[in-house]
Image 1: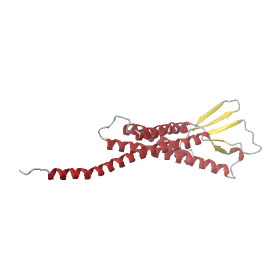
Image 2: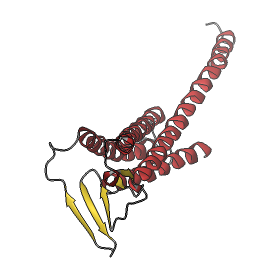
Image 3: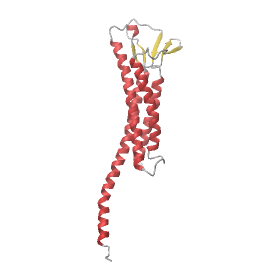
Image 4: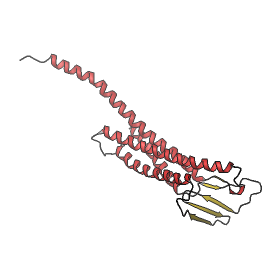
Length: 218
């Protein structure tokens, strides 16, 4: 029961991380206009994400514009797009695979070893999904930091980290934690099964010897 609860904890952590990854992918606040500087007074806040850029006015009105061209975007934006989409797809596949491999489900109960390996595969996919998200968010944050501290960048054209980056970091950590819990629980279960099998072998051999000794001749 404890092992099954550990798997459930890992699964729900990864599921929460997957929802966070989807939110990070669609949010436009990957970077936001900086208000650093003594003489900067801006009535419009600028935001930019992977798919669109937005302008928020002081009246509360928000206008967004989707990026028209894919090839004209910076390399890091195109790469982050691809990594986030791959992460969402791998997370979706991992959710389905993990449900099949978890002990609390009835699918594949007749073959516990295969069921455990399926659960490990699902946990590994969760881990890879989290790593992809972590690489994408960290790379984007590195680019924002580079342009912010670049002396050639005008003060009124600098950007800072947006809320979506922090959501992405948290989602990646949850996803990797959940995947690690799934993998560790299944690996420990397989080791216990192997130890039980090794311990049962000598007793079986002794029983066979006793049977041969007590056998009567024809």
